[in-house]
Length: 361
Image 1: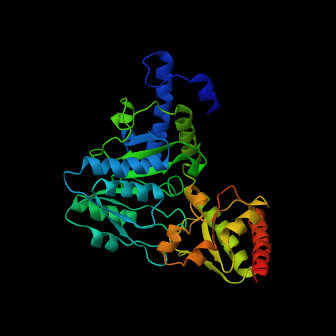
Image 2: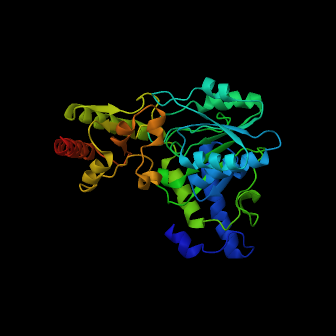
Image 3: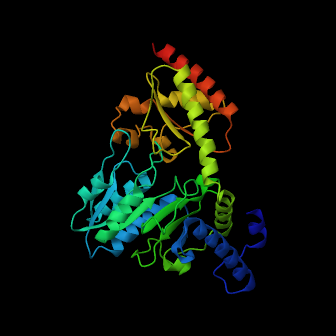
């Protein structure tokens, strides 16, 4: 990326030599991502990240297809980028049905099909939940909707680059992804738009990105995203095995050393690097402060909503009380973590939970 900033500084839309060179390296990154996703290069539209991609898919698809109907189906524990896009559409006169997950954090194909109406034009269900890690049956849902002629969007921000995804097998019309979730630069993402899927741009201006996303491309960010994808290619299974081992070691340590804890969501069909745990009698934000003092980064919900200090809507959707949700901590692990770090976290948690429970009693 530093080399790009120094040597490929031109606008990739320019017809001069430097512009053509910049466009060429954007094309190389696009090809790398398309290869990983098993799709056509023109189906990759670069954005500023997962939030913009979600907005573009939901609002853009709704506006472009409003003549066919004005009803949308999604789940109640989607990322706020999806939920707030749906709320924006409700203000425009669209109707939205929010399907609730079960207590383990699963959405079934049947529950989605039950919510469909004759005027349904779009369904949006995330590939994996960002707070409790549940992997949802998007392949089955997409297949079902294809036969009904209903557009399908999936937020794959938490899965792209971590799970193998083939758009030839996943019959989704739109898929969102973000660079920073796979160690790429922040502020870069893409929206997969299947050829022939009707979608309207929500950012208007020039003709960049196949006339779907105006604005000069973030060349260094795009190249960094392509590099992050290339670095992970073919290593998904190896990384998953290592990370799930670390996650299980963390869980075993917590269960052994700390009483009155509960895992939120099922451990089956769950992202390898996710562990969400409720510590009874502890305020999660207080525990985070103690962990942060020891150099441990965790969260009480989605990072984008940490400032709100409200119980997680995801944990509420799967049936937790306000107190249980407020006592919950989400840990995220990657292949760059170590067993030594996991044991350090367990020791810090043991001390922190004991301290907070003692001062409360």
